[in-house]
Length: 112
Length: 124
Image (cartoon, rainbow over all chains, first blue to last red; front, top):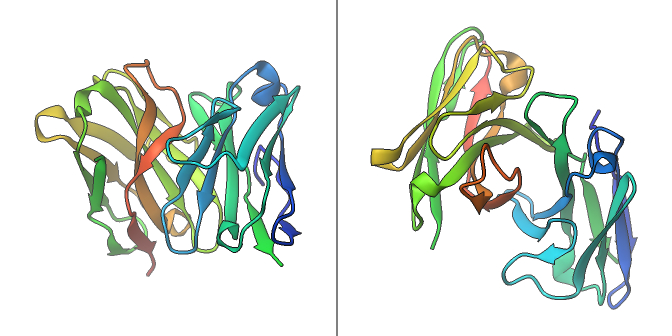
């Protein structure tokens, strides 16, 4: 069971906006640690999308945005496209575990 | 451009050892902390270990501490993961990953460049 909780799946039609939540606790997101987001296609290494809660990685379109509040964070994807269908992972740091980065369990996005 | 190429994966029996290597190019290796992240078949991502840019600080996932050792050879721009006393649950794709920021000690703890991964299968 992951320390960061994500919905197993979300879906949306092309052109729509979807959000993926990431819920943590007082030893990670709630303690002020940044949240980062990754996109992964089957059989391919993950790719950094969003870092430091809201900053887009190089080359990432502005359809992708991140936010953080309290013990949670969210990834929003607007203008959904078929090529956005992938798994998305949130990631942060937890100070209850010595020197540990932590991931959410991942969310499979289906474009209908 | 940044390139990370892992090698050393394979099939190994429980209790045996394996050493993974990651050859880095396209950036100044000595300026970045480096990580290993793994993904078991059909599962999510799991951080395994980090080494600071100068090798002075190392941290591990609780379940691998005492069995795995992360190291780096700056002269060869190569990262290593020595895995001893392997268990069935260590079966995964192991990714070599660059830390997202330069000269942050021990690390910024986000991952901006990933290798293609090397497969480790622990099975009798």
